[in-house]
Length: 333
Ligand SMILES: NC(=O)c1ccc[n+]([C@@H]2O[C@H](COP(=O)([O-])OP(=O)(O)OC[C@H]3O[C@@H](n4cnc5c(N)ncnc54)[C@H](OP(=O)(O)O)[C@@H]3O)[C@@H](O)[C@H]2O)c1
Image 1 (spheres, rainbow, N blue to C red):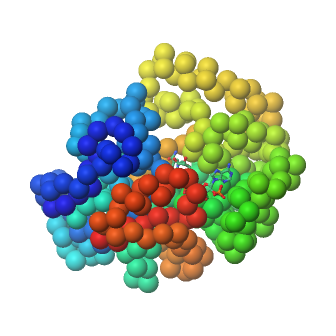
Image 2 (image 1 turned 30 degrees about the vertical axis):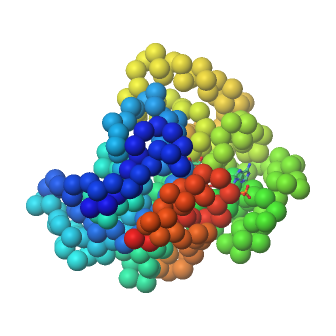
């Protein structure tokens, strides 16, 4: 089969190549999916450029891409929820990486039936970004109706879904973006759209229950200026907190180092009697099915910025890496 492969650490134009690779062999708990669409996420180009080298070394060549929508062509002997011919979508496990390819392997527990009303292109836009929004706002922040949430980078792949998910929960949503995306985010239902090119968001919001920090750095620290006493800050781009460090199984010395790196955040959180969590999203088929239902009920509308062909998937990654995507960038196979 044909697959886009990472050939070494480097940049998008020089370290990716289409290769003919053997058909994957699945285990009893997995399904093999003929890919009809995939989508790209910042983690794809961040891994390629070596951002996570210190944590995990890559054996090249290695596939790229984590989101897929397609048709099941083989099921493992222990799989009961899926059969050959089913239309499915998935955020595949990191160990199985490679969805910008003719076929992809997914654990059955990470897979969900694709809602009939959604195209494969739309379904492929959902998994990683949608699960991130859900696990940040619902699983971690436990966002409630009537609460106020600030969502940074509302126009990104994660943000466009997070805004609509938070609205479907009944929250008041403020979000940050640049001038050109203000109308888009208003149309997605955001109650307060702050144009960071024109306004200092710190002057526009205060006493919030939750901040969803997708930007990291100073934004993480400043989240504690915006939340009320006892508020919650959930980050997907900030410093690793001790809960995540333990979940990752990091040893005591590394945990101490990380805790030192995060000390300003810990202090800011303590002053506000607030909680701080940094999360890494997890693949989850049941949650993906819940998200699919929200799209089917039109509580969430897909925001697809650009769609590329499989042959042009390197351009898809190059576009995403510019950091200006409005919603998701998808690939049709
Ligand atoms: N920890 C995890 O499990 C996890 C999971 C998913 C994503 N992430 C991380 O979360 C981040 C967002 O992911 P994504 O998929 O949404 O990325 P993305 O789609 O590439 O985000 C692009 C958007 O970010 C906006 N943006 C950039 N700088 C901004 C700023 N200073 N203020 C407000 N908006 C800004 C841009 O809007 P403008 O053009 O208007 O500036 C653009 O629309 C990435 O760093 C990603 O790696 C982490």
